[in-house]
Image (cartoon, rainbow, N blue to C red):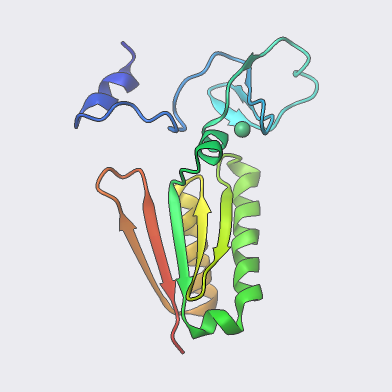
Length: 162
Ligand SMILES: [Zn+2]
């Protein structure tokens, strides 16, 4: 049994299929986003090396997108948001692009505008927190981060009333 599997059983939970540290045979290509798993991590394909025969498996980020199961949810609300929506959504998209350059598994899954709240879902909890902190840094307001009990979903709330 692999070390990671042993650890995953502590607390009675089966191992997390979305976990970034899960091992795959190398090289494995994701048939959906074409990232390549090589040297122990998912990364952008390298054309010079991609001619060799590869295994095929969805990367953890695509798996979450297919299952509609985010790792991070960011809720934006307050009157300030209505007046600065474009600016705030630009911050989110800039943060996601700069995160993806280093960590291609960190993606925005959807942005849904409700009547009072805009919801941003991410494939990685760090990205939700990163976007929330960037918005707080640029626009002030109040940021709250709540970790679920099993630590597989982080909810981030940002609100500015003024
Ligand atoms: Zn993928």
